[in-house]
Length: 284
Ligand code: SAM
Image (cartoon, rainbow, N blue to C red):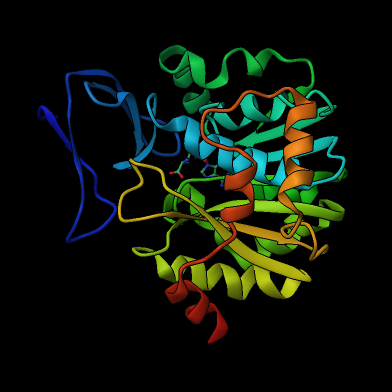
């Protein structure tokens, strides 16, 4: 390990971080895990050479992957999280007081353990919340065997390489849908559309036919480089991503949840897609 960490996501383009101190590095049962300190972003975690989360910009991604579906759903009570071992999604989900139960299925216990230690504000005690059940398992095995259903499913996975690959398959999307209540919402992290358009296309082809309404929404996340992040959205209620700003604003106000990035304007605007994405989707 030199004093620079070079991300390996793209063969001819990338980013590096100056490493002030390596806090943890090990090969877990599933992936290579490194956590280091960087002056700009604070603690940074990478899995198999790919940046997963940083202390400084995590709030954007976690708020967008959580609050967009949870404020769009009229009455969410049960949530399933796939992946998300750093605890950021769980923290945001549990801010919704109406949520009665959250099941989080993470394949790698080491990610949870190390993030509790080096990113304590990511979960902020959420792993100990009595509404949360943490299952250490492959997400696809969980949805294959699950005997309960959820209002919202959030897939906070690694990219479709290594253990995360199964979470982008036809089988996973089909099995996950069986765990979704009527008019429930499923969202998934889906890469950076400018750089990973193939992921967007594949998800549209695989997830799209299963739902009456399948699209994407976007969010900039500074350390997911190359443009805006694309988050997949799927539901059988085509009205859920078209609700007026006033409806969302009222729900946010009633919840009392204080956010740093997400708000009603962003909620309404995030479903606007760049023309090159719309064209690619229209051509399918
Ligand atoms: N926000 C990040 C991003 O977009 O790059 C991803 C966050 S990271 C917490 C993703 C988590 O997914 C990791 O903890 C990893 O262990 C977990 N994961 C990967 N494959 C999985 C699988 N098949 N089932 C459950 N969890 C999985």
